[in-house]
Image (tube, rainbow, N blue to C red):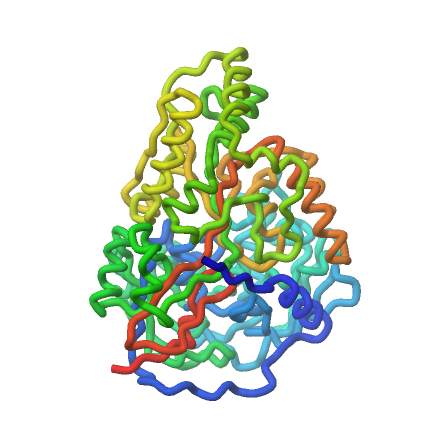
Length: 539
C-alpha cells in the first residue's frame, strides 16, 4: 500500500517567510460549496483531559475542539502553510522583535473585541510558572520567560495600542511566526479572568464555531458546536455545526460510520485497516501525516535510571520487530520509525548516527539486557500503559509479547479505560509503568517534535528527561536564520536522543479515515485532522 507524502515544511517555511515580512492574506473569497448550511457534521473525538484552557491543553481530544472554537493570529491550511487569521500583519526587521497588528472588527462570541490585550494577557498567564500550564514551554523564547521564578508579565510582550503589540525574543528566531497558529497562542476574552475554571467548562472563543449553549459539553459523551456568525476569518463554515462524539472504542465509532450514524471518522480501528478502503472506496483516505508514535520508560522507574536504564532501553528497542508489527497489526498503514520526527517534515533523515538502535536485533538485545543485569539483576514485570479507548491494545500486546519472548521476562500491557484518565496519571506522575506516547505536530517544523517533548522542563516532557547538551542544541537550532543550519542542529540533538532513548520510537502514523455518503468536500490536513469547516452535508 502506498502512503501519500505531503510536502508540509517546504511550503510552510516559504509561507512563513512571507508572513514574517508582510503578512499573508487571502486575495479572494472562496466560492461557497453546495450543501445544507444548517446541517450538523458528526465526527469522533475523545474526552479532553482538562477544562478547555488553550495554554493548558496539549492533547488531541481537547486540541480538536480548541482549533474549532478559537482563532489565533494565523491558521494552517491543509498542506500546513500558515495564513493570517486574526493578524493583519506580523513584521520584523531582525527576526527578534516582531510587531503584530490585529485585524479590525474581530470579536469573541460574547461580543468583546479581540484586542492586543486579549493575546498578551493570555500569553503572560500561560508563561507564568505559578500557573503550571502544560504549554508554558511555548513561551520559552520570549524575553523574560523563566523556569526558575514566577514572572507575571513577560518583558518581551508590550501592548502598543488596542490593535498592536510587540514580541521581543531572547534571540533571533525566524520561524517564530510559524508557531502562532498553535492553540497555546490563542487569545482569551476579559470574561475568562472572572473565573478561569468555569470558563474552561464553557469557553468563549472567536473561531468558526462556538459551543451550542449551556450543557453543550456532555462529559465523556460529546460536545456540540454551532457556527459562530461573528467570525470573519477565512475558515468560514460551510455547514451548521460540529458534534464531536467521545467513543469508548474505535470499533464502536467505525460501526456508527458503517451504519450511517457518523459522518467522518479519522481513526480506523485495527480490525478494519485491511478492508476499509475496499468498503468506502473514494470516501476513504490513507495519507502521510505529521504523527510520531513511541513509548516512554521514565528514569524514576526501578532499573531504568542511569547506565542500567540506558542499557535496558536499548535492549527493549532492539527486541521490537517494528516491520512485523506495522505489517501484521496495522496492515502496512504505519511506517517503522527511523528518527524522532516525521517523514513529512523538512529535515527528516533515516541516517542519523545512533539510529541503528531502532533495528530489530534479538541477539544484541539479550546481550544488552545481560549487561544491565550485571549492574542490578532484573526483577518484576515490564508493562506499557495505554488508553483502551484509542485502539492501542493490538500493538501493545504485540510489542510486549516480542519483549517477553526476546528478553525472557514477563511483559504485558496496562490499560486505562479512557484517554483522559491515562493522561492524568501521566501528568500527575502517578503512573508506575512505561506508557505509550505520541506526537501530532502543533506546527510544521522539525523542532516541534523535539523541544516540547524532550527539553528540560517542557510541558510535554512526560518522562522528565534532562540533558543540557540536548537543550543547548535545540536553542542553537532555533536561533539559526537559515533553515538548513537549523536542521543540522536538530539532527545533532537527535544523536543525543538515540543514546539516551527518553522515548523509544516505534513508527510514523498515517491518517486513515473514511466518511459517509451524506458529506462531501472532506479534506484531511497535514496533521491528520479533517478541515471540518469545509465539509458540506446534504440532509
